[in-house]
Length: 115
Image 1 (cartoon, one colour):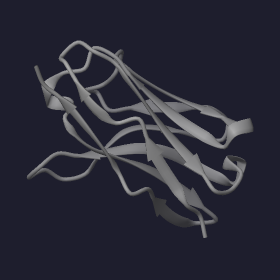
Image 2 (spheres, helix red, strand yellow; image 1 turned 60 degrees about the vertical axis):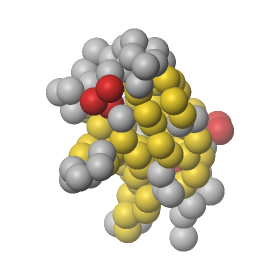
Image 3 (spheres, one colour; image 1 turned 180 degrees about the vertical axis):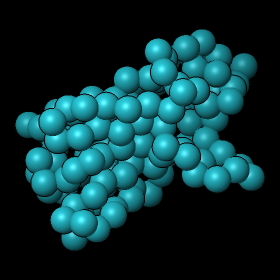
C-alpha cells in the first residue's frame, strides 16, 4: 500500500507561481512512473506532467514551458513547479504513481488562479 500526500495548493493571481509537492510513504524508486493530473469542474481528469524513475518527463501541451516536474529521491517527493499561471489552470491537482502495477492517487490539492 502506498500513500501519496499532496501539498502546496492555494489561491494565486494570474501570472503567479506555485509549487506542489507529493510525498510518498515508500521509496519513490519503486514508484514508476509518477505524475500529476488535474480535474477542473465539469471536465475530465487530465494528465499534466509525468516523470519516470530514469528522469524522463512529459507534459501536456497546455503547460509546456510553464510547468516543471521533478523528483527528490532522498525525500521521496515529487514536485510540480507551476509558473505563469493562468485562470484555466484552476483545478484540483492529484499526484499519481504506479507501484508494482497498481495505481495510487493522492487526495488532491486545490489550485485557484484568480485576480
